[in-house]
Amino acid sequence: MGRIIFHHSGGGPLPGRLCFSTLLLAALLAGTAHADKVVLRIRAANPINTVQTVQIKANLPARVGTNDVTTPVGLELGYDIKSDRYYVFGEMELGAKEIREFDVQIRDIWMVDVDEITLLREHAKQLVAKLEGSDFHENAAGLLAEIEKNLGSVTALQGESGIGPSIKPMQHIRAYEANLETLKRIKTDLGYMENLVLSTGKDIGNLMGDVKEAPLPDGSDVVLEGEYDVAVLKISVRNTSPKETRRVPIEKNLPEEIKLSDVLDAGELDVSTHPETEICYVFKNSVEIPPGETRVFEVKMRDKWNLSGLRIPDLRSRAEALLKRVGVDGSFKAVEAGIQELLEELDAVEAEKGPTTFSDRYVAFYRRQNDQLDRIEQRILRVESALRPQTKNTKYGFKAKPPSMKTTWLIIYIILGFLAIMSLLFFLRWFGGKGK
Image (cartoon, rainbow, N blue to C red):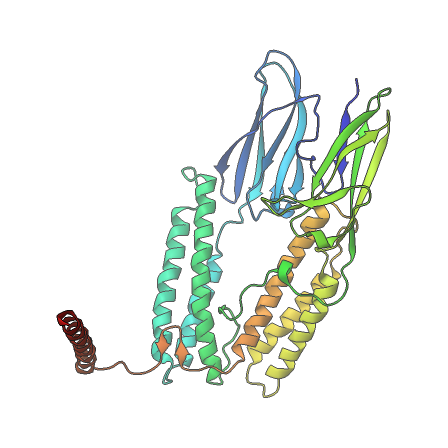
């Protein structure tokens, strides 16, 4: 007796359309922690009294990349395009009532570098010192106090949730995510301080802060000039029966980057969008597969992943324009050096060699490359923002002496008196109208 087997170049099964002759068992995921790594323990069990083949799959935490994982013998590393996360999977034969455990070792990427904390603290102090005697010094001192408090919070939380026998991996990971949010606030405060120093004409050293005027761009929303390349998704359907012709439905979700207008040619398949998720998909209600044959369907899409050829020339042009601008008077040597580093990073990204045919690994590689280009663009935006003229209107409001206590109460009494007069006028008008 044969079966229908689906394969596609994007990796993973077609949801709801794949028939297994084996039993799929759920993997139980637990975790332990060691000095420099997190260990995710996967348990596969056969609960019945006969031998059977089981398949296991376990998602890895977010942010984990291919270089962070050591997979045990018997498991492989896969990538899920939809969730943008890696997973481990495998197929094995288990005896009656047999239980097997697999330890997946992951490099501990959930730590804030202690050197980074030190650099941020020292940088903030240096910025305040450069503003000594200026109109901005008082505001900068307030920002420094806030930065010191937040850096202390990061250090304390990291110490409490560091890897150890009593700390569960998810507790360690959640603490890191919380610290990332705190670091965002710290870098925003640093960004304001850096802009204030630049407005005085002084060199600030490295630009380590962020500002709201230079948000982290999203590569999927970048407006690009030029033509996208074409990516080809291949879906193959095989009928393993040597005698029977089969008719089967096909349905395959496309990656979230793809919209209806990005599907250039679906071939024999139809294209639609799930109304509840707005995810684009290709489908065919009934496809005839002769005995022992395989049919391959090709879907041509705009390549929304390999964008380096479109993005790098624009980023390089903007960085070179900034380099020329800051190099005019030689006052910002550190900023100039930072821009030069960005140009070198762009050269390195351009030299990277990724997969050439569309697959899950193709999507994973170029998504990570676009993340890198996003970070480079954010730093370019940061310099562009820093070079704009600064005013005394900062995060803490207008830089001016606050009114005295006497003046403050005088303003309050004037407002209260005005409200009392208005209330009296409304009452007299109402009372006069009532008497008519």
